[in-house]
Length: 323
Length: 263
Image (cartoon, rainbow over the protein chains, first blue to last red):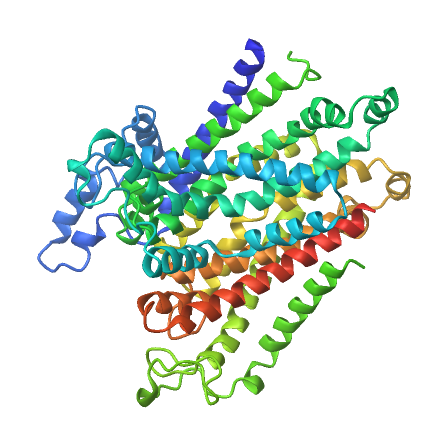
């Protein structure tokens, strides 16, 4: 087991390198230099002053050198300071990560709790009305654009029926609440974002679970179990389900980047102070340090998610020889 | 054939026809401003109502179909070119080429795609061409993997050995024999990819960095609708429904093709 984890972590380091390279290239696609905002069209700034600014920030060095300098700071998690408010980038990101991660976590839990049973029952009752109905329902979830869903839910549940708050993660009187009330308040704020975030992922997981379960149910060992006279429930839950769950675990890991990416939309709509919205705001404001920071951190989180998925898969599947 | 698949084909065909024959279907000029009729609900003269500048929503949506579908097709086209080429090369040549390409794919897959797209689009300018290219440049990874898997299994087949025996060049083998025989799963990817591209484009337009007004796109009509949420439900409902049904159609079609292939 240890060797396996070690090998994976080595591969990770290479990937991390690659991530930094791609991020660096992406930022430098943009025409113009980061200092242009202050220097370019301002007649008061002389050519000489511009060159001094360039030199100050090390922008006149060749790209390769700039990359190494940047990399040296990134490995210490120093992404510089934000252009917008001069606060350290890492601090801004760290403030926002908990919110986004919380929503992600609850989404994943929801997806598992709802998606897996749907998939399993669909497989067991293949071809029945339930199966067909669930298929359609799941496709709807897949196809509905997140922003539209968010807006519709916001309008219906938030505005017209006034059941749930529609923006932010705290109410105005948050500070005055007791601990229990604070928890409830936050939960109410999170319901809609989590629902929207989970809805799309549900489709994927339940379809995958269904086909995985179907595949397992056709196997010989299931036939044997039934022939032995085992109760159907035992056949399903003790043998079929465990085997069918394995590939689903990997899919979970792969859906992490999708969840993070999707957070941009619903965080903007529900005014959630999370990483997605931070990214959107900094992109609009051309705040390069923050953009780079979020890209790298986002990719790192994805990597961690994949690593976790791989390790759990290896831990759970006895067939994998961990060399 | 599965009923759902037929449903999917119908939807896809329906919207393609609308997009192609847009000028003949739209009753008004999509850019025609009519201040006397700002934000009117659906009526007999304006089937879907009008927007905040009095433009007929139905006509705007018909032209928006053109944009959305065009972006979807071309973006996926670009993604297919890149993905099929890289996947075939990786699978065929193996060893170092394969290793490098696969590592590259792994790296690209680490980024939340939407973040990448957002960053690049906002850093360059949001033109339709840029959108198509960047969506294409970030969605080819799945196809590459599929292609590589198919090529890996196909290249050991007898007919490929025969080709090599008679001295066919690598390029000929790849382009005329391997790729055509491996297209099946790629086709599924393409169909589902079009659905995804349409969703991404409308999300970008909704955020304001996609198709720019006054060019109508379902996404930016929706974002205008958000501004007038209480006063004009039709502005959000119709484009949202359109996106939803189109994406549903392509998904059903893709799943139908996949089911047929797996028989």
